[in-house]
Image 1 (cartoon, rainbow, N blue to C red):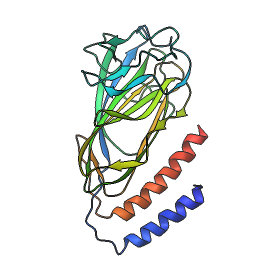
Image 2: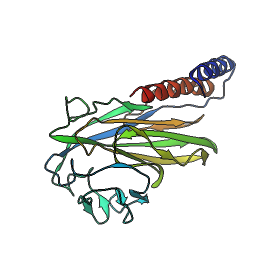
Image 3: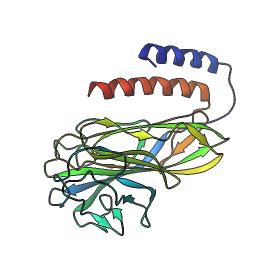
Image 4: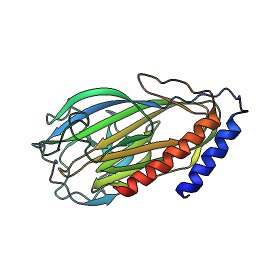
Length: 251
């Protein structure tokens, strides 16, 4: 869909929303914990090259971390930061080269620029280490409906819904769009969301992630301010999606 059509669709939906009082809410926040992987880590700056959709398995491991796929062939040399089959770039307790640097609550869509450097995205470069992050939240769904995701990163990003992968972007590469298994029906109730990001090469960084649906509440640790109008929010979401696509193409 072109930018013009996205703006037009958003305007129509916003007008329709003026008479809509369905009472559904949508608070778009995620909690995030930031880490730094030191340049002394055996994998940092050594893995190469390309975009892969088979770096991790479809489920999270016993410690709640992405599991390295034994069939992954994209790393040169092989990935060494593995514990019990899991990648440890987000675990100071399992990897001595990883340090937690901070926490925050962020709004969706997540759109981190090409200088997403440690600590917490405020640094000037990633020569001494790369930034990794885990975003978590709970999606509250009032009724079964369709949901879709969009993801892009430099380098890798993996999104999981209820412990099952829904967006997959592995490898070491420049900013690239990943693959998401969407749209699909999400059932009514509470659903956990986890987004793992890692920058494993000292040459730029960045992350984009969005959720598109109506009548869904996604909250992190800090929660968010409810918006009562689903159609108005959907229109705003279409606008945000259009601007996000335009920004990613400009990178």
